[in-house]
Length: 263
Image (cartoon, rainbow, N blue to C red; front, side):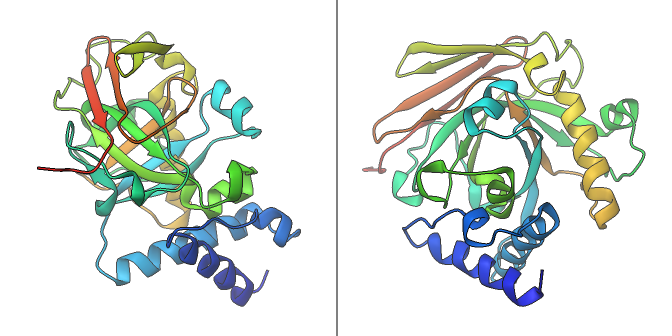
């Protein structure tokens, strides 16, 4: 696919951030492939960083079977986390920033050393982690009605929207992350539960996959970067006034509130 067509697709997605969604790119451009989709994603990242944004990490998406069934895809993807996407815990988040937001509970890795593939092992990935932190990811889509294929979500920066990190920082592997349980609450009521094994067998596997996937593209996961490993449950829609909290066994709790700050 030509660079011009890729840039046109990136421009369409960038324009959609102004408040309206677009038809799936996979329908508009039938021969779009995964390589094109990541190039479209990178074109947007280039646009944002040239205007002052900073890459603060990556997210791995579509790792849980529940999410893959929900969105009709069959493999993980990754997107970029920018400084503009991070929100403070318990501080109201204005939903006007988003179009079709949904929330997911995730375990976040914060790196203490750089990590670059190919060939990264689980042991090397574990050694690069400084600490883990509970997180809530706000996913969003610039594609109408979430009618996405893998190609669409990759091009749309893996449906990234926002991130809320918790205030507790855990030792990376003091517990078996495969067995780490999660309870997701909406306005105080339990709506879902999950375990770390839902994330590619273990959240650590997501970190390994990411390092080995982006490494051949010349990308290093830098010290201090945040990596969201993937959701432990299905994603749930967010409405104005909602409060969501996720409690992770042995790690801690993170809370996100939605609504305009009236203070």
